[in-house]
Length: 221
Image (cartoon, rainbow, N blue to C red):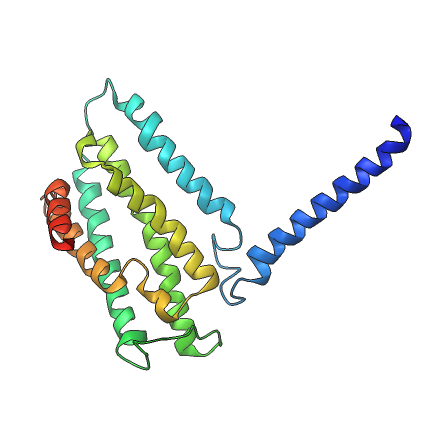
């Protein structure tokens, strides 16, 4: 009986494994945008998820333990250079959002994704992709906080935003790189607010996130 059941178990295992493979291929290949599915970090969710998991592990565990008996790093030159690049990137994203989509042939009621290979459609898709890469680069914000022992700046809202936005922008790049998806994270507002925040950081002014959170909470009421 044991001998006879072995082929049955193997057959069921193959069916189960093949079903998972087909489902994975369907979700992460067939449903994706053929123009962007092969771009760096886009084909599979594993690389991006690994970055996020490593980020959270560093912020919540390894980083604080590593810095516990060490003096905070100053990182002044690195921060100036980093924030300067973020300012340039935010300006570029803001400009691309306006010039490539929002101020041109764009319906504010319902704008479908243009999946064609036209120059305009590819420009919008590229902008969404660069936004995804920008969200990954902004994980350094929290890493710098840990290295400078600024744990008071690392709030739940901060971690939630920096964790969710890379995943959301990855999905937008892979499946919906255009249309109203260009408003992910309120791109127009966020690009400019990020620009202002990094300008303050580049000039040595540390933003008061607790105060900013109080202001945003008050405005939402």
